[in-house]
Length: 266
Image 1 (cartoon, rainbow, N blue to C red):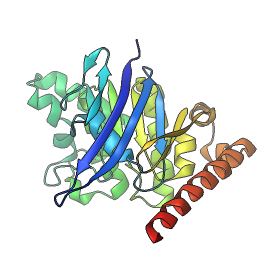
Image 2: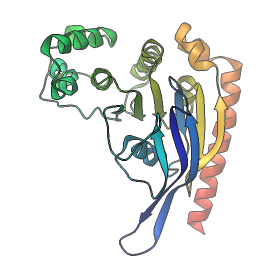
Image 3: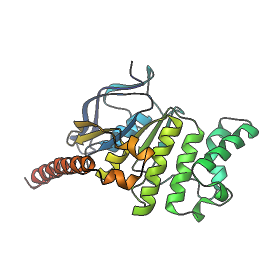
Image 4: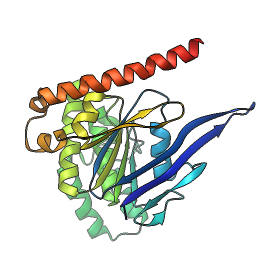
């Protein structure tokens, strides 16, 4: 039995004035425990819709999602979400944000403090623990969001373009942090991104989705995430195999985008 199973999943949005949009159609996927999966595709291919169904924020039209044999029908603590913008409590301190989930669960203060201290060390924010979130840079805020997600000890971490708003240097540093957290915690991570480089670097398994309706177009098994954990991210990106796969995927997505534009013009 797969750790996380998606079976014949479809999602249709009915429009107020009639008609509908088929966002996803007949997606089936088995995801293993501890797997790092990146999902890529042109705008409108249903990447975020898929992630929101996995999180339990949306109810699919048909098909089902199961986690360790239990059907996913609503949000739950076993699935943590990290958004493009951290969705943090900006008026609270870093510490208070990270401890929010455990505190809501009624976890004893001593245990809660130990978890928070360890996580702040892990994401490199210990010296900023008493700062208000609004005082931090975008990259630091995303580190807080990661720590807050991990504080709930979810089995699956769902990431919806969490690095998309960051500058290039900060984004690269955060990519390294995501890889290190994946290797250190053994969590299952599903990452949505528009960046081909990021999808290649962070996905030991990569899905390219096709739009209208959203479906899996191509799947890759890649060595780059494992190499980047142990080595230098830029050296991995300079690998000829990385460049070749990037060119192949870009051509695939450009072709899809052209088809979308041709259809719109028609």
